[in-house]
Length: 153
Image 1 (cartoon, rainbow, N blue to C red):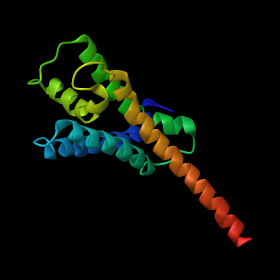
Image 2: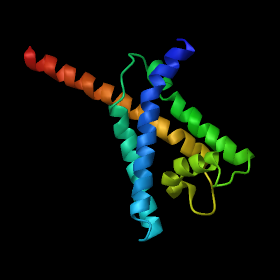
Image 3: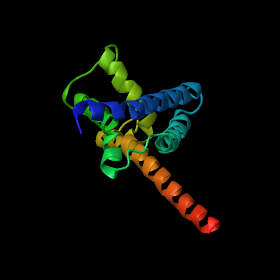
């Protein structure tokens, strides 16, 4: 599989991930004047559910390896943001600082406002949930086919 093939199958999951993050940011913005912890908790649960359901919308590439590599760009992007935050000092006014803040904010429930920080979990979780959603879709479709075959015979 060439680099362009991998990039081509990664565009759709990355777009879904970005849209889901924007929904999470909107959820936090809508609940900002209420209790911050409750709004962040709702956004966190919404992020988990939407990433999993987003996996159902992905295309099956007929191989677990290709399906896993189809969510690779999401992991690489989030991991590079985590590395950037870890090794470089970023300002919120800069473009990269705004991107880091936007992609990190919906996961503040695990990151915490203060205290322990889990950047690798935030980098790994969205791609894992997208992949699990895709694999669940395949499993459900295979069980559905088996049940339809039993009913027709």
